Image (cartoon, rainbow, N blue to C red):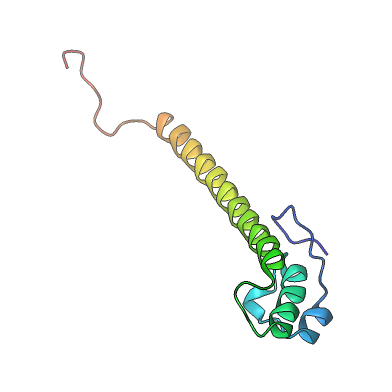
Length: 101
């Protein structure tokens, strides 16, 4: 299942996320990495120095999603600015410029 506007596919299914009790806000394209991370955290009693590799991989995936969204937003803003600029150039001024000004 692909997510609209994202280059990363959705790997974890809804059933897998429900079974792993992944909170709804975390059910994104990186959920397939969060499931083993949470299992490791529970097995290791949430010790911060455990599960470092799983946490790093998950956080890198989340970072890439954020950067992808920022890039998409930047492209949208540039397109809007370009559209606004083209509309601005084609308008007739309300006060005409005189020859002496």
